[in-house]
Length: 475
Image (cartoon, rainbow, N blue to C red):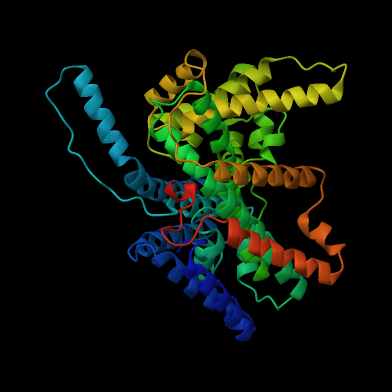
């Protein structure tokens, strides 16, 4: 069930209404049932995998807490990690591994071909597995106490707003929230709906419209000019932000309506002054997950620069693999890691003109991120390299027909400017709710209505349109 589907527009109000009507002590049960219903709308059998992940990490948490010897606790932790990572690897990387073996055999002229397999990737598996792993590791580290109630823990793993694409929450933050009742709060509900409205604007008005141009150029890149490829890459950067941040806003807003606070997942990433700063602003829940559970255990930045560089490359290579079973994702992750290693080698110096230096740093960072975005979006790593070569060597307007009309381009341009202004306000630490709270109630109501009408009028929906899945559902 997609957030931008008509089914969800019925599902969410019904869930919310009954949540506040039923007795407080059983509200978490209602959320658990509706969360599994929400997930089973894709494929009912997917729920068995999520239940297995839940049961294993729950049991491991109890066993870890009940063992005094460190070796025994570590063995239990390793067993839980192996099971969950193994399950994730089977569904996500089996095809890639078999294809890689076949290519190696071909390169060595060995008469051996691996069978072709088609394994459907369960939606959201990368997200809920990481969330469950963090709980188990936190119990092992003594950061949280294990949850004794299996079903309350199951709700922590399956909570529907953030189930299939994050934010990847920690048990110390989310588990205690979902297990207790929350009373109706008019202001909180209003704020949550406003955040959801922003998410729908980013997804339906900007991201889905940008996808039309991006899909056309990347799909026919061989016939497109260098200028068209460069423009499509920039448009994809906007699409990717609005698609994923849009999902996060809808998830955060929906949870807020129910009285639950989720972590911020995006914080104006294109205002970053370095690639490292970019990853402190983009998909924050995943970045901090890798920081806390991979980078810190490896030693973080302690030791020599060589050791720090190695740790960074390991983290971002694994991040690339997390994003997908293809060499382009590995290259994308390694490229992000390499840029940060290079930044660490540049000695800091005090700029003469701080504002100009900051502007230059932002533009430089965005340029580097655009290179990684092209690799991320291209059909393959070889295609990405060909496209990167084509941009400077075949520069020109070109006559490749994308089917993207002038009015579509105008709407996308205007909405992107609106997005930039909103991001600028957020960068100035001014949120939408803080700004709207200053307005008279009548003006505020008219503004909300205008925003809804803008999404209805300019959103990509209607006859002939099927709700577009969010980009990160494939991961």
